[in-house]
Image (cartoon, rainbow, N blue to C red):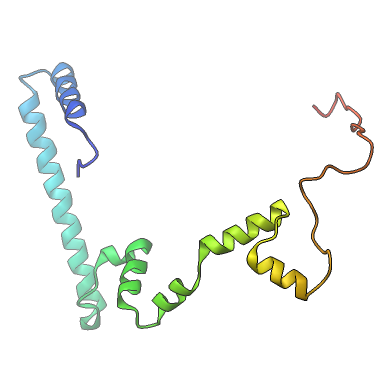
Length: 145
C-alpha cells in the first residue's frame, strides 16, 4: 500500500501527525483509522463474494483484477490460444517507425528504396527544403490577436 513512500517521507508524516493531533489523541486516531480500513476491506470482500455467487458456478474462477485492461491483456498473451505471440513477434514497431521517419525526412530506407525503384518515379516530397516562393509574411491583424 505504501510502496512509493520513502523513510524520510514517513518520518515527516509521523511528525506532522503528532503536531496536528497531539501525542495524546494520536493513538485513538490511529485505532479509528485502522478500524475504518478494516470495515472497508470486509465490505469489499463481502461485495465480491456476493457478485461471484450471483454470477453462478461458471464464473467461480473470476477475479476482479482481470477487469484491469493491462492484467487482461497480459493474461491473454500468456495464454496464447489465439496465436497473439506470432502476431506480436511478426510486427516490428521499430522498423515501421524508422521507415516513417525516413520518409518524413526524405531519406531512402532499404524498403522504400526498393519499392521506389520498382514503382513510381520521384513521387516523394522533400520536406527539408524551403518553398521557392518569395518570403512574404501574411498580413498582421491586430483584432485577431
